[in-house]
Length: 431
Image 1 (cartoon, helix red, strand yellow):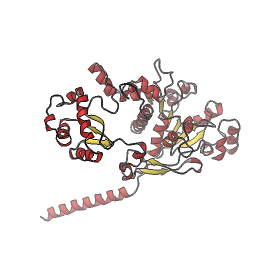
Image 2 (cartoon, rainbow, N blue to C red):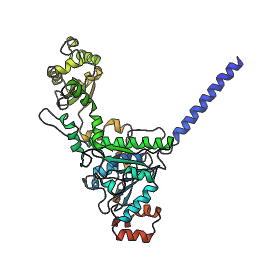
Image 3 (cartoon, one colour):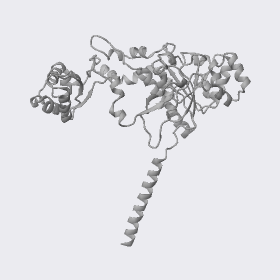
Image 4 (cartoon, helix red, strand yellow):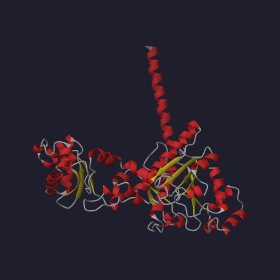
């Protein structure tokens, strides 16, 4: 008995020690996962900057190489965020900006020195530009075997399409996405830069995978992502549907091409509500609780998912008639009672005040260049326990040029000469 008591007390003590240690560890922020990793990025627009910003969120030092003078052309997309471009503010916080004319011999020498001290090199230059500048992945990795390279292109670096320029909407068209979005009468682009975002996400995860491979095997694989390949992956479900079903999913506006009922309905007071029924138990609940028509549960027109899609117009008419008899609040209460998934059709302004963001503290302040007021930015979606993401200021063009050059061993005279020759921008004098 004494031995059992001792054993139980010992286990309790071990549990208490472990829980105390866990509480202490959770109270002390852990270092950011990519602290000590240096990324050099010859980037512009959206895809590559999105990938590197996420690396910066995790603690990587990201040195953004920009053109002398104007810098990344995404800085001038608009001026809506206190004089700065909304795209640039979103994609470039926590980075350091170095202006550099990489087409000049002195500029290429500086870039070579930067890359020699980096862990990751990212570029999304125009087709063929990296090869002309001596920055092809094979050449860089032959010189720096531990360097992770990431190439972001439009249509890949091989094949007859390798030399084509690719912008987001062009890729939406080429992958067939536009044939799926919109109404039967009109194709409509996706309202965000979905091809760029997809490519940026795959570049980000590819770089993380390559860093892990380097850490575990010593080999630093090259990463290559194209906008076309990234969005092509996202098109896989309609691709399967088309290849094996014989026809592609139709354009159905805010409805779902292969699920019904799934779409926007308007209540008596004008409130718009989107609902989704995904399976037979949900269909039965919708009939009994919301529609008040238990006789429809086993109606052969609607009893299965395929049948509901085949008789979508009849079904949507039934649901629409029920909404028309209810105020929005009444309709939502019945949907909640039936455990039917639904959503309000929010504007962007309503999204900004969404309780799923405000109640969970998903907003942080991020500083802007030039003394502009701080902006509210969303915390990165992937949370790591004990880790607070870095959300440092958005850099002014060339803001860190002199400091970075000094780290590379360039003295004041060297920096002044580079500025006089236009290798670095005049803004470097302010850094």
